[in-house]
Image 1 (cartoon, rainbow, N blue to C red):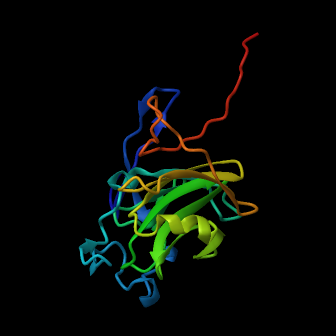
Image 2 (image 1 turned 180 degrees about the vertical axis):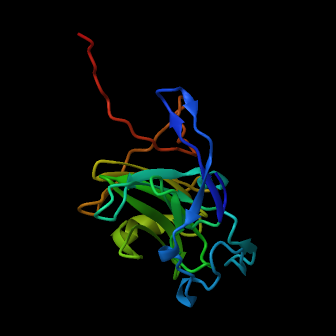
Length: 238
């Protein structure tokens, strides 16, 4: 809860059916990584203004979907010795923040793209690992890539085939994602409705496929889709 760098955490105790009082989160000192010029120059979560390709003034604290600030996933820590759980979420400027729920610390991870890039981003968890999925435009085309943060830096672990992602170019498309097992599902929604679709990716093999269009009761293609996953379970009390 709160705004960077003043974050707090509240825990719900199901055995007591009540919330514990909020506790302050502190920034991990060893993970303070100021943005380098190649990452955009603006340190931390400062707001920077730039001109988009269409000539509009864009602020880095503006997202194509404001609700993305509430996107979050939980995954085990990448530190070998602690076994703690880490919650990943997006700041209002689109950077990824990692919160160690056991140590009650947080770290704002480096930007994946320079600050002046327009892009849509979401966080997703697959098979115990957290990823960032980024849809961006560059050199007259669009790309959709999957990134993992490890060893203090982002590394690309997957990318949609260019022939498939090019359809999003110039559409101001937004993405929302969900993961389960080795797969992640990406739902793409564009402002003009011309580039909507759902795609499945096998992260381990980087195999992508487009799913059939989802239509409503009138047979029209839905303009917006939000993804979620669940694992069916059958429980019998004996």
